[in-house]
Length: 216
Image (tube, rainbow, N blue to C red):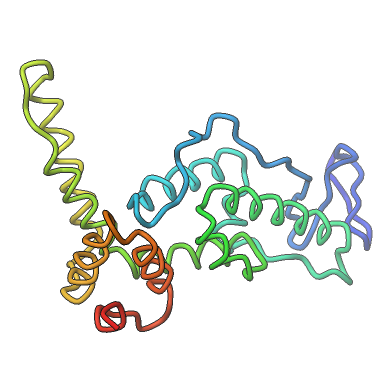
């Protein structure tokens, strides 16, 4: 039996927890969680793990049918015309946003907590990580230079690790020379001046950040 909807969006012909919104889009509340998410996979600029983190988040959102919330293609229904669908959309989006914020470092949380939707939060994180990709690039180079062929590991396995790192680095784009200097400066503070290192990392989220500002 096909579903019908009244002015509130309630339906007949579907389970009671299903609501029809604009263009007959079906809405139902979702509890957004993933017990398989690695506890160590927390978005951190210094780990350079944006590609891995965002890929897993996108696959997770796709698997539980909330990817349209994440990419912003599913707009919030009008509250006056579809109050029930509007309420469910808001509930699902808040749940997804909370899930995202649970998977970032405190400094990232503070930087995007003003974003009111899961899509806006994800995009703000994307912009920050892509703009500050130099940290991820240098960390990736550093880690890859620590990879060596040895007798205990297949040559093919080690080659794949190096090739994968190269492909990740290539997708990050060209290295900005000014930011490269900044990374060198920040890295040199790590042993004896960790408080200054943290301060500069926090400054790096500011617009128009440069090595000149780090040197002041």
